[in-house]
Structure formats: structure tokens, C-alpha cells
Image (tube, rainbow, N blue to C red; front, side):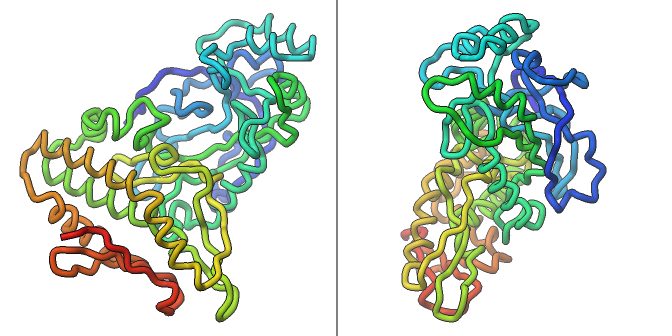
Length: 390
């Protein structure tokens, strides 16, 4: 399947990279690259190796439209995070080479930007400190290392059932280019290394934000793109969606380790990332988390574990229910087969978690409870969450 999207031409340059240990044995020298928009070509200290045709994704990412790998029985695409942004962060003004020249304090950078050959879809990596660990339009090494560590901790794409889009390589921009980019700023200077993440993703369809096609805004297009042409296919899609959504609700439980009997539990939690914008949907309905920089370990004393488990459920439960409702409404519109809302969700959920070692569904009359468990057989750190009311 070829990914649709607005075309984006990027220039390809040689780069020093750090490779995910899961992919170290693969012949990936052709990915020892950074990919830059045409506006920045003149700032790179070496000649380009050529250019590649991507499609836009999110604010600062691009995806090759043809698959490059097969994981979990699905085609995956190369996504590059940190290729530059096209919009001024403080207004709706285009962030093009002319604006970059205005912002730069370096006369050589100003001159290079003004004489760089014109190209479609201007965008810039800047030296403006944006997030805690990233420059605006680019990616910072601090965040990329977190994403790589999560990828290496996973079984390629799975953290105990929580599906991720793995970072394959971190590609380093050369220091000379970093210093030139650092001069393009508004208020605050990003001090760290500037890199790009090369990661594998199963699509460019997100739940609601940060994509042109989302479950929330164009679910009919999602059905068409993924070839969901029958009621049975829609039901299987919903079941896989729920199977992969449950780990979003229970990530800490799945990854928690206890330092010693009676000691604190340490597991993964979400920081400034959300299901509606930081995950993509595979063609079979499986959710893959993409922006791994927001997954970091936290320590919780035993008496606080239940609260943490409940907090993670509430954190993503609305987004899960919202997306499920959009998918189910489109299934009904196309194929009919009405069924009582809660009983259908319960039936699909029961099938979705039948092999899940951390979450079970317990029916209590017409109601349903999610039983969330850690690896430790201790009632104090288990949770019973009322999921459906009868």
C-alpha cells in the first residue's frame, strides 16, 4: 500500500548514526543519513547524495510512501522525525528560507538561505528551544535517546503487548550545521545535539490530531484506505483495535518491576504524550505508539500503585472510547448489523483480552470490571476498574 499525503522532497546527506540493537545485524548502511529540506541544503558542509520523495507527516516528520520492512505481518514505512517545520511557532506565518534569514544572527547563514535554490514546501530546523529537550522543527538527542531506549527495551514492536513504532537509528547532524541552525531563533537557544529519528511506522493515520486523515475526522477514508469491505472485516478491525488499546490503559502494570519485596515499583508512564495524537493505526486496526520520547519510567510505592493504575486508565479511556465509537458508527453505516452498544463492546473486549496476562474482564451481571494485574501476586498492587455499567 502506497501512503497518500502531500509530497515533500528532502535532500539526503551522509551522517553518523546510532543503531537500535535489534536491527544491528541488518544491512542498513543506506540509512546512515539525514534528510533535509531544500532551504537548508546550502547550510550542510557536504554535497548531497541525492534527494528522496517523502510525504508530510505531523509538524516535523516525513514518511517514505512505499514500505521498507515487514513487521508483525504488516508493511512498515520509514518515518524521519526532525526534518523541519513549515509554520512559525508564534504565528501562522510560513517558516520559509526568507523568514529564516530574518531570524538568523549569522550573516553567512542569512546569505546562504537567501541564495539557496528554491524548492517546493519550504521548512526549517531552527535553534529555538521548544520542548524540554528539542529544538523547534528538529529533534534533540535527549528525546531521541529516550525513544531509542524504549525501542531497545521492547521485543522489536512489543512492550508486553503495548505496541510501538521502533526507532531504528538516531542520525546526528554535523556540529557545523548545528551551529548554523542555532542562529535561527526567536527567544531561547537550544543548547544540545540536534538529531533525527529514523523509525518504522505502519501508517500515517492517527486517532484525531497531527495527520490529514484520522479516525476522528475521516473514518470513512480510513475504511477505504485499509480495505475494510465487509462486516466481518470491520469486526476483526474493532477487535484488534481493542486488543491494542487495552495496553494503553495498563502500561505501568505491564512494565512494573519491584526493586525488592515491599519496595517501590518502577514502570513506564506517559509524559506529555497522548493516544489521540501520538499513535498511529495499522491497516489491521492495531494501535502503534509513535512518539516514544514521552515514555519514561516512574517509581511508585506499593500503596500508590493502585492509584497509578487507575490514573493510566482514565488518562486514555476517553480517547479509546471516542475512537471505538467512530469505527463502530462507520461499520453500522456501511454494513448494518445493529447490536446494543454496551453488549457489543463487551463481547469484542472479552475476545480481545482472552490471551492478555495483565488484564481480564469480569462480568458482574450486566456490568463489567477490568481486572488489572502486575507481575507481582499481591492484591495491594492490583486494580478492579468498573468499565461498563449495566
